[in-house]
Length: 283
Image (cartoon, rainbow, N blue to C red; front, top):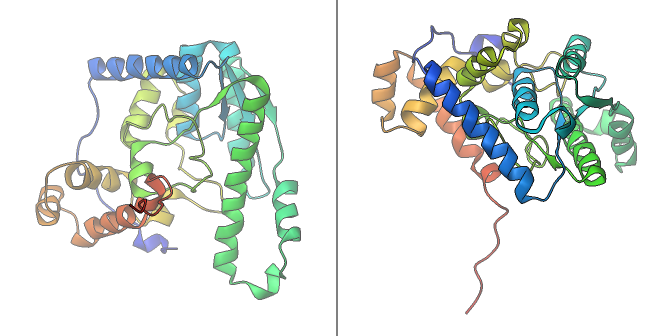
């Protein structure tokens, strides 16, 4: 995990904000997408894990607008490493939107995995590797509860992934992206915040420091080694866009190492964005 000093520091290098008309168009496009996905599945609504972060909050606001309050069931799933304030924010979002929600403490399930594993994890495992492995178990446990509720109620599971995290691979495989669709998956992080403000999401939720809540003190930007502003800009110009590495460095006035960092994140996470591979059939 990078030190805090490794996190790229820069002013906003590229303006990716949308106009009012563009925001309205994105909003309507997402609403129609959610309705069609639910209808095509023959489902009665959707389930959404609520974390108190901006991605799940924006997704909840859009889902309620698309499906109505009865169309969304929220799950708040705290673990022992989650900030209590985040969990309070998650319940606050559900209350503000007037949706039904349940609170499920996942740590007993996570602990059962640790106890069932045939090794003394506390003495035989590298601490960093164990922290990451257990953190991923927490994320995957939430996915199981999402689908348990969805199966019981004939609903689909909504994801909260945005375009920045998808391209950088900043998600747990078969965890927070074990979902049926990602309503905000076409938005960079800066556009997530902008659309949230456009919909009236309280600014304290919009401005919160992003965290996946996998271990104590974890933050997205520190773990990735990049600010979202820099990540978004490099993705838009170099990964999604036509500029070379050197042209991106010149255009954004950032260090070449930042571009190489993004290239590495995208390359190493390619397997996460693909179906599991299989050998070609033999003739």
